[in-house]
Length: 320
Image (spheres, one colour):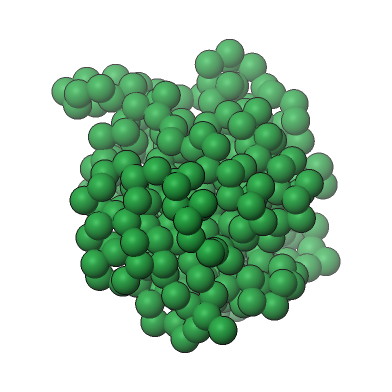
């Protein structure tokens, strides 16, 4: 029996998920909702199903096992809660909210209703991430260095702090999440940022660049640098250092350094396909054990990135 799926949000990243689901057996996309009716209609025409502009109407009319919520950060309101209240399994794209209060409200509903959930932190599904985790098992991590450097995404809401949360919350969140996944829980966040080189860009009020220092509960420290002003030298990744082992991670390869030895391990899987396949199987089996980023865990990553923004604004370390 096919898993019946709907989408709330039908542009951008949602289209990527739709393309992947269309290649999976026993998955049927039956509903597409977007405030832009033309986007919803285009998706419905391509993949079948019905188009909606009101998610409540779609949730009421369609018999769903799962819903993908692929919205800009500012657009999260009651979508997750409305779906959870109906017992529908949730896949939510990152970041999960713009405030800790909203994320906690959603988390509490998900847990109260016993809803299976997954969040789109696809870097966790890269097979070299698992290799890095294996290599670091039992090692005492001293420090890590991460970065997400590149250009400004083209969607207009991204460059408005009140709509995206800025680069740390919306984009570099992948690096913060990867650091949490490999190093554990964050204890302290201390951040600084620069602005002023993008004054010619309309409505641009996010940071040009930032540096965030993290202290972990296990004593490790990590610095993560973000910049959206350098498309000429894009780079994203995380390097983790121990006394006798260094692992340098990018989305495409893992470089392992040990005394007298260097090994490059190329990534062999599509993490987007992996996260979707894992989610659909969890829906089908009602077993969420293989989901690597459930909603409650993603809320912890949001907490760290929001604390970084708070630290920048207040000029002080934030204790978590």
